[in-house]
Each structure stands twice: as C-alpha cells, then as structure tokens.
Amino acid sequence: MSLAHQEPTVRVGVVVTFLRMDAPPQDPARKLPANAEVRRDRWCTVEQYRMLYNTVGGQYVWWLRRIVPDHALAAMLRDTRVSIHILHVDGEVAGFYELDRTPWPTVNLSYFGLMPHAVGKGLGFAFLRHAVDTAWAMGPRAVTVNTCTADHPRALPTYVRAGFRPVRQVREEWNVPVRLGLDIPEALRI
Image (cartoon, rainbow, N blue to C red):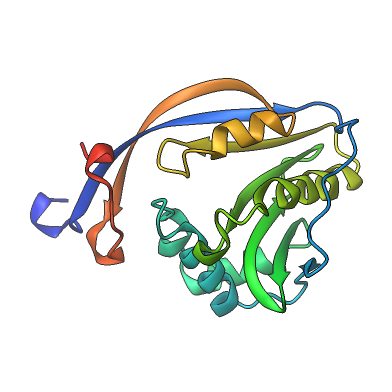
C-alpha cells in the first residue's frame, strides 16, 4: 500500500510497564465513601462502554478501543470472561474498570480509571482495591495490569502501592489516528 492511501496518524512514544500480583493483599481494604458504590454492568452496551472508555481515557491517549468496530466491541462485552464494573458517586458515574479472564488462570485489569470530575477526590486507591479484590475473588493464580507514560502520573506508583510489582518495561511506538481527535501531549510525540 502506498503512503498516499494510509490514514494520517500521530506518532506517539511511550514506556509501558507490565505489573503482576501473585497473592491477594493481606492488609484491610480502604473503604469507598458511603456515597459511592461499584456495580457490575452485566449488560453494558457499546455506547455506554465507549462513553466510559472515551471519557476516562480522553486525557491519557486511550485510543485502541476507539478504533475497534462496534460489532467486535459488542462481542467482547458479551464474553462472559470480561466484566465491566462502574463506580457511582451520589448516583453519578465516576469511573470504571474492566477485568478480563481470557488469559486464565490470570485475571487482567485491562482498564481502570476515574472520570475527570472524580480525579483528585481521594477515590482512586479505594476503587483500585475494589478492582483487585474483585479480581482475586475470581480465583486466579495472579492478577496483572499495565500502565504507560501516557497515563496519569500517579498510575504506576498507585499500582505498586496496591501490591503489584513491575515485571518488565517496553518502549512502544503508536500510530494514533488523527481522526480520533485526541489531545496528545507534546512530550509523547515522536
């Protein structure tokens, strides 16, 4: 294929850190505030998922699921090995996480984050612990997650504080489609 037919992209360079937890945390879980609850959404629609993913990941160059066709995303959401959990604060959506059991006997915390209005409110660590405890309740041998230098600067230290240990780092270069309209920080552009 000639370059004239390729979709315009922005080159992005990140360092991805892969983390693993081999045993459930032994310390007591930090509780979410009384006005907060996490609900598993067993019937998450493509539209609902895209709203969660795009809003939570909009500032952090979350782009991969944005290019997945609706039919493929719908199939993923119907897969019983994948679960979507939504944080509500005072009845308003404040974040979500996605657990994936397809790499069984490992559970992967595929996506985790807060809506922009919920960042900095002291919810993140308790919400992460909810995700970790929910993953361990599934009975895996390990729980994994990854983060990158495009994510919130507190993501990696928070995962480590929660009990994950880094197992490797990889430098990746992404071709992020311009049509997605993502605000890509200058520091990440190649």
